[in-house]
Image (cartoon, rainbow, N blue to C red; front, side):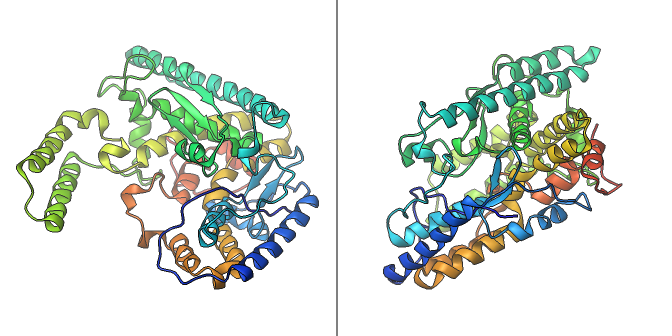
Length: 441
């Protein structure tokens, strides 16, 4: 099967490292050769068959993409919808930093490769936007039904609150006139996000050409954030669920178990200790702190006790995103499993289940990451000294990143313990799962 490989070009700022002057002539020559190979490969791209995943495991899932891991398109289906290798996009941005200006764009047949070229009159944009809005409506309807199925006499008011929240979620897929506006909206890279301030899901334009199931899974995850164990207690599109009355508390408790994803829970004492540590470190760096600064740290510690019951699972409060992301994954897995089970054709069910996790694969698979890095490094590393440091940063993120700043739990936990846990998914994929995993029903 032939696959497409290309680099998405946008403006960005290079990671700051000490560097020697690159050989621009050699760098351009190597990049031009790579672009030529890319343009030729796009014309020969064909649809692929859904691989067989032997084990319901993220590592095995990623292994199925190994043969395509040096190409941009990791997967393309018969409907012409494709999933890119998102690492190439990240790598291209770093190479631009060596050149001090944007790379020449690839002459791609895919209008979503360079989203700054899209506008509201674009037939491709409007066609895909209509498709995605239809998928969003389906997800929204199913999310409401899932909440309704958990109604009991004692939680009726809270279920009503959460249903109203989900029904009020809006979807937006903005277009941008310049790279600064795209970066401000969080769309420099392919991305989707839930905005609690206006109860809106932002779908970046680069995602609009993804397969239906990939989008279904992404939208299910994002819409679930409107009622996750942090946002459920916020005043969004109506009243908030009172502390201690979350109708999904049994799911939250299950997700914290080792038999599920083992979502990290942070105690009130832990949060206070972290604030005190910040104060101590600041004093070591700057010397004795002023009374005003000390008073601010004291206020933060006092606020922890007053807000712990409603904010304990909020990333900005506890420093852990595990429970918010784990819950959104759980709810998404329920909706994907339900939709998968509705296909009477086993092949269609398999394709839907497989494609549902391709966004995570294109963003997180280690073997895909390494292959993409090696391909770009072979073309530019000699004449782009900072690339070697960036390469090490990608391969060894723990050396550079505070774990509390990571927005999502490890993909292996998310996929193995939640997204592949439903029996409907396992049946559709024909894979065997860990029998000890809790589905948190």
